[in-house]
Image 1: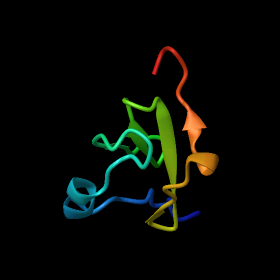
Image 2 (image 1 turned 180 degrees about the vertical axis):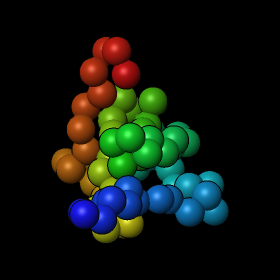
Image 3 (image 1 turned 180 degrees about the horizontal axis):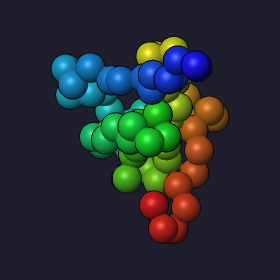
Image 4 (image 1 turned 60 degrees about the horizontal axis):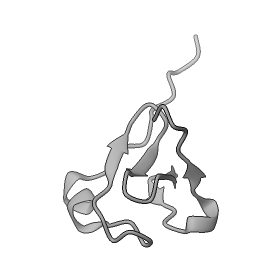
Length: 66
């Protein structure tokens, strides 16, 4: 039987310290997509191997529904 793949988790203390590099606003954690969401900049920053990639060039634009 295959082992379940653990989704990355962001330390709540780290989340309190991180802000969006563009809007300087707060970020929220999305465990479903393993991304840090900036509602102000409408961007989703990926988290790879537990490390937030806070580069706007690596971020995904949020869809209007998100």
